Length: 376
Image (cartoon, rainbow, N blue to C red; front, top):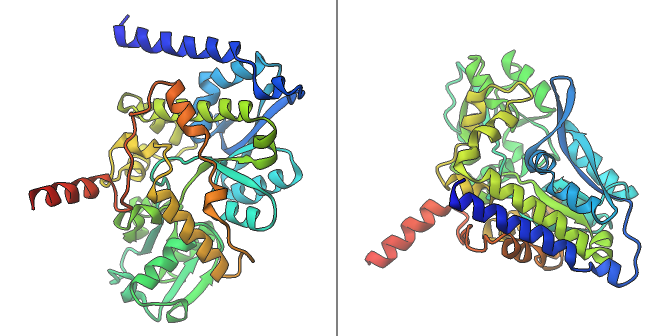
């Protein structure tokens, strides 16, 4: 066996043994552990069975978290949700207490907490996963958002990708009243674009497929914008559960970061792509979706609380408040619980694996600025 692999396995074995030998906070306080720890996230049907998405899939495959919880007398239960309704379903589950942790985020998380249900962001998931696209019919002469002024624009309002649209309009000195706006879901929007009933569609869904089918043409995407414009999915936890069971919370956080570390290695890219294509999405579309020149592959999974995360949620809260989607603002310093990530990184022996990112424009541009400053 490769010496480096042997060392990694020995370190993980020692970590597991050490975790079992240290009494948890809950046990030390005489608290009964929950019968199950319940995690929610997006899922889809593939080959006749429900398949978890993202890091949740790799956590389930690795089995480490399930093993650790079983040895403490708790089960691991997954709560799969449709990707079309992840936000509302998980918000409802947090509200009625049927889940303890969830992999989702963005606008739904702000709505939940502003409404009085307290959750905490435990693990940021990379530098932004989801891109939004401005698509026009293939034959359209439009080359920019400015060319669409006075024309019809379809977008599903109140969804996370509405925020980058608003930011794009603001950056160009435009507003909604400059367009004939249609508030329709992505599937209806795709049909409207294909039948030329709208002049443009702003969406996160199937933009590359529209191009491949010769129906549409992408004229702008958040790949051209700062990183904090992208939509995000993080690990969130119920504040009540975190406060009561910080030891179990640490296990969940460590499992997510363990899965992120595995997915971030270039040798495992094909497995990540295979998961993303399990629902029938063509691999060529998946590879284009994942490609981003602003940062290397492993930074896609960084769990660090960096400026990209802060700027994204500052803008999310401001947008939701200005649009009267929420009635009060949220304090990021209390909303983000940063206690658990450093412990997980240290326990896994990867404290220096991910580098801090201080620019919302990406690691490559930040590096170029540093080199230029040094040259000057």
